[in-house]
Amino acid sequence: MTALSLAQRLAGRIQHLLGDGPFRHPGGWTHMGAVISDASFHARCTYEATLRPRLLRLQADWPDATTVRGFQGRLAVEDLAVAMNFNDSRKVATAHAITDLLAANGVDTRDDLHAWLDHPANRAALRK
Image 1: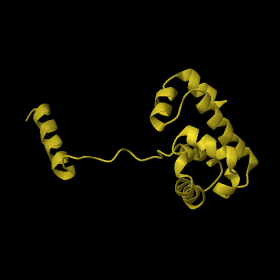
Image 2: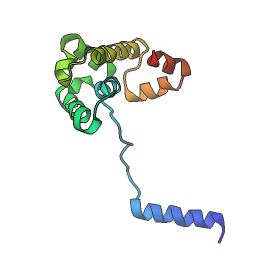
Image 3: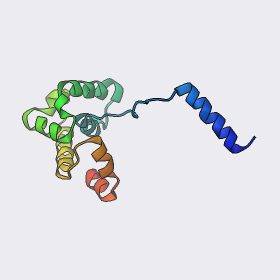
Image 4: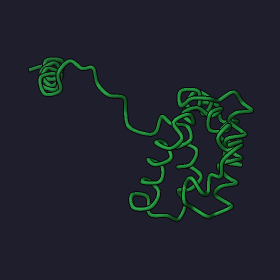
């Protein structure tokens, strides 16, 4: 049996098991408020028990923050520490700084963020 026929059999088996789709997009946050908050609040906390429930609540409570501009608008009128029930001024300041950086560079959606992060200079700016 050739390698091609083995690959074809494997592909056929996978298609049989999974079907023809449509398939859900890979996991991860699409709500930019949750993306930014996840990156900002993640350090030194238990993710599943502490951070994830707060991110889910943020998505539900701030549905207009699915874009960076929407999140930036919410940050201008509401306290992220209260929304996240997380009183760490450094982490809140980090979320504000990331939001401002992304907004200043025209990043508004997760797709924009992925494209922006393809450039090493942008990754360096984000790490700063």
